[in-house]
Image (cartoon, rainbow, N blue to C red; front, side, top):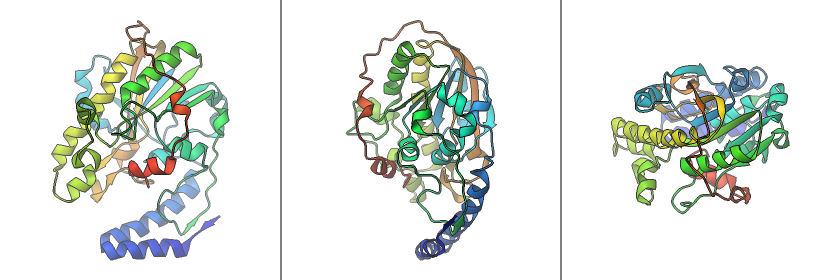
Length: 327
């Protein structure tokens, strides 16, 4: 059992110094999530992706259903956009609820290619929710598999523009997926792309520059009045197109009869005064995620030459999480 009443009170007091609203929300989050994770660590709420039928699952990070539906007419491979309820409202929560011993047999035949730093956070550091906040009382019982239980687990974090960005651009990830699909045979493959999650990289990547404030810290820009929600929504959609353009190439260079494009969670843009994707937040724009079914045929229109050993070097997981706003 986890007990940290003093730490929780200290955090609430510090947040109250900022504003009454911030302090109250901080306190309620700790109380709520302590109870929530006590229950959901044993009985997750939502649809586990391993309960659905697919050969290749492409997870977009922080992708809203309404955003996918808005850009869908631009892509021939998106015929319709359905939805499911995710098991988490954040990546950390999603990972811990998804890769459970209940699905051990399926996971042993699954290749996971991930860009999300919460994967090593969970499977190498052993860190489970809550995240960077205190809960007064919790009795969680996470039923996680081990890292070695996956058929193959790749954490991709190195890329050609790492001086500008922390997460890898989608084209770099797609190159790895194409090459791995031609070299390794597993029943199922999950690819966890980082986009459309912040930073909004489409413009900076095309121009080989650092992201500006709106692209790197959109929630701060909105709160400070230096950006409107409409401006940020357009950047968000461009970042979604950035990854979907890359997925279009993947579908021409990978053999999979049943391909699903979904997400780990959505994103809030001011709903109920919240931004991003806080843990344990049951808003539909967070918990409902897209479910797009399509197929892929390897027509060999692309021949990647990426070094599949690059991503195996050591990374500072905590620093990467801080850079991306998780800590």
